[in-house]
Amino acid sequence: MKYTLTTLSPIHIGNGDQISNWSYGYDEKEKLISVYDFDKVVKALKNNPQRLLNLSAEIERNPLNKSLGKILKNYNLNLNPEYKIKIRGEIKNRRYKHIWEFIKENGKVYIPGTEIKGAIRTALFYKILKDKFKENTKLKEQFLKEYEKCLDVKNYRDDKDRKKQIQKKFSNLEKRWESIVFRAGFEKVFDKEFKFEDAKKDILKILLISDSNFKNPEEVLEVKDITPIGVSKKFKDLHEIVKTSSKFYIDMRIPFQNEYKEIFPETYKYLGMKKLREACSDFAISLLEADIEYLKKTEELEPKIKSEIIKRLEQRKEIAQIAIETQDPQKKYFLLRLGKHQGFLSTTINLLVKELDSDLYSKAYKYLVHIGYPEFPNKSRKITIDNELLGWCVLIPKTT
Image (cartoon, rainbow, N blue to C red; front, side, top):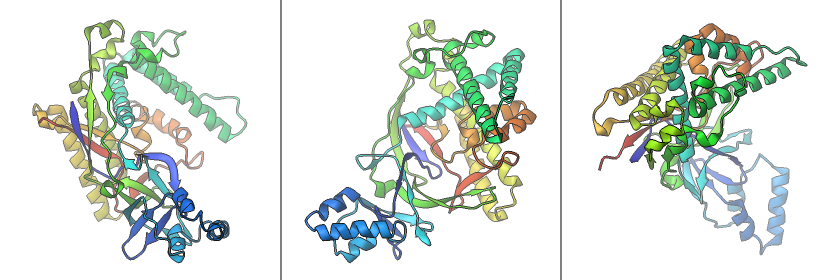
């Protein structure tokens, strides 16, 4: 089935690279970033060795104090950029900043199907465990017992080594329970010999999600400063982000067959669009409530700004609730959070632990986050220069 992916807030899905000041120019008047292919710049100068040497010398002398755009202007080199996009943020603070790049293929922007599937997988992991623990108290107690046991580390060199060992144990715990949920079934919980099941038996192997269609960067991208709240040291990072209200198209289907029942664990019953949609909504509502709770407590934001952000989050909760209750084919929404800066709770099982045993969660939290001091971990959120939390989108079925 085909879906329209509409962004409800800015989204950044990175390719791991940064665009350096020697790959862009900045038009201060128009607030535009022009992104160049540096190899093409070198190729354009190949017939002028002296200028090529001059460019190399400029980069060595001024690694962050100049940008490629100014050099091209000084050289009167009329080279077309790969694309131009708007910027909202500070490009230079004594030195030029690098820009975190959005994922592209052949210069075109897209949303990877693996990113969407990963978000659905996390939501389903949360939902299945939540449902199962309501049915079976022993399973819940075993899970929390294993969770707490991860904190038991005796032989460590220092606090840093202790934290590293605890994080490794938590990572293995999550992999074990993920294997139980998606591959082996809950009868393996009390099997002391069981660790991980073959990935070939994963129930989500048959959830097929395509990459989205491709878009020109000028159509959907802009550059924005992203900054944390709830941390002692403020810093701003520039990111290429997909703008709010951008639209992409994907295909998502489940070619389910009866014989799969013989292969997969009992959790295969969640392999239906209705069940997956409800899992995404349930998880999204819990995430949104956690963010709303956080924002209500923070004193860092102005009351008006805080109120506006919370209002947007409440609207997303309404979308999630509609998706659970609706019979309307056009309102069978998948509410998801994608990409970088979606937050610690969005990508782990810890949201469920927070709900099951808040004291245990608080006890473990300082070892699980990757920032802050050992005894005072940062409980932060990332927002754009326009005071928007990142990552939210909705999949809307195309019925015609």
